[in-house]
Amino acid sequence: MSDAPEIKQDKMYKLLREGKIADFNKRKAAGEAFDLTHCDFRSLDLRGLDAKGVNFSHAYFRQADLRGIDFSQSNLEGASLNGSKISGCYFPKGLRAEEIALSLTHGTRLRYSA
Image 1 (cartoon, helix red, strand yellow):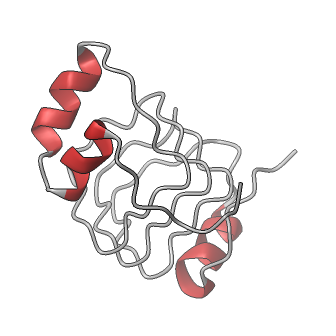
Image 2 (cartoon, rainbow, N blue to C red):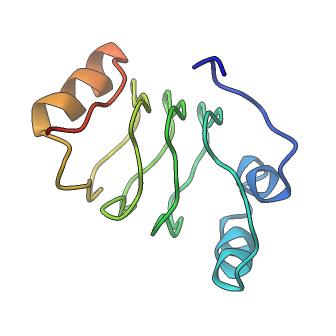
């Protein structure tokens, strides 16, 4: 599979693209399955998203509004944060601040520390 961001047909992903964060959170809490790997979240407002346990590996968050999201229990391996708003975000312990800064300013893919 390519690392290029995708616009998938997944129903839960479509809710996020449509800005229906509360609906996504409710359906996630009810146990609905979804796949957000390799997804394109470019310029989306995702504030309020329940990211606990979500696999965002290789996702593309360019210029997305991620303020206040708790990613501490999410998988962000290979994701890119270029130009995103990340004020108040909580990131996984395995991601160093330098790694996050490089992704934010240069669009590099996030890599976890060993």
